Image (cartoon, rainbow, N blue to C red; front, side, top):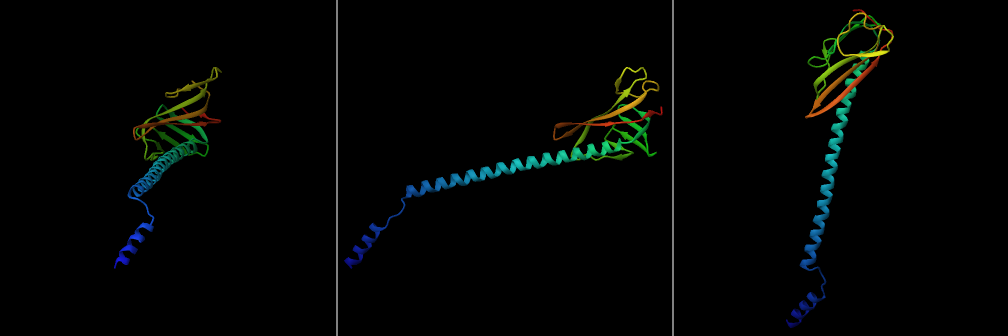
Length: 181
């Protein structure tokens, strides 16, 4: 029996292992590495979400810009115009009405801007004067005889999304356009 206890004592002395302190330090280092990895993962997720949201916003703005730019092509005659409304006849004979009073309406169809809301919209006209004084910018209603030809139309939109404002300007050059007013 003595040999059994002697063998057990020799077995315990011959075993090499980690102490409790060494195990605690190893666990702390493991938790630190796992915590850093998780923090890095969360940070990259937040950056990706912000990038994705910005990309979607830019996509919505691009669609709005493309829609308005395409609508402004081939203007032949201006029937009515002021700071919030434009009514023209295109070279194809079709009429085009743009209204910026309580949203963006193209031929009475609402141009949806979700997730944006329209804060303000303005139409500006670049015209050549009859007196050959060059070009002037007109913000209000056209009056007959104040210009020879319309050269460009600029639509400026101030849009809001989550208390942040975005400005969008669409400029379309116009050729061979005369006033029908």
